[in-house]
Amino acid sequence: MAQHDRSRRRFLSGLAAVLGATGLGALGVRLWGGEGSVSTTSTVPRPTTTAPVAAPTSTTATMAPPATSTTSTTSSTTTQVPAAVQIAAICRDAWGALPASGTFTAHRIERLTVHHTAALLEQNAQAPARIRQHQQYHLDRGWPDLAYHFMVDAAGNVYEGRPVDAVGDTGTAYDPTGHFLVCCEGNFDEQDVPDAQLASLAAVLAWAAVAHDVALDTIRGHRDWAATSCPGDRLYPLVADGTLARMAVDVIGRGGAELTVDCGDAARQRVAAIEEGST
Ligand SMILES: [Zn+2]
Image: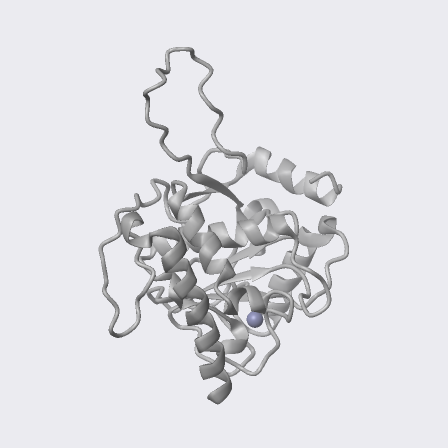
């Protein structure tokens, strides 16, 4: 308990800096969701895409920001609309997921929890196979699916996991009901977090905060809830000191994050390219 209190104080002091630095009130971002907080209605547009649990019928999108207009009609007085960060999650079929089995338990997302796989990732080309192995392992444990709602690889690719409206699973002693579970591929007790992976993690958290109306001060690491080193000594400090929350605030301030689930041939080709080491 005392350890948790200490980490919470570190986290809150980090977020105090966020409030001062970014003018969150002006953004209308509901950063504080705890008791005694002032809850404001978010003025940030919600993602216009379907939820990631929807059937994988969406069209292909890319991780690149929208192309700027090539027309010459833009006047110098036109207000620039911030471009949303586009998250094109790789659908389950495209990364080779097995069908879910068993029964999911429904829940409502109330907090955001960061994990790592604790499996050293030496080449990002291994990532899709690793995610398939994790899912197989989790099914073998008797869980209905991959434990997590989303996975993020070292290159920042995002993979669709268990439906967000289904409670995740854990081998540790905490109840994941209400937790949005995002898991970074890698062992961050032993390796650094690549910038691209951290940026995608922040974008996914920003999307989840807005899509599920959850305050960013609920971002925690797995170790805040259970006896585990997860998400690793090189990632957890970025959770505890508010760095990740600040990055998510920045994403929202720049226009938010839009998440689509990328499926079909194009998505399978993306996975093939990752496995060939070209992305
Ligand atoms: Zn974990």
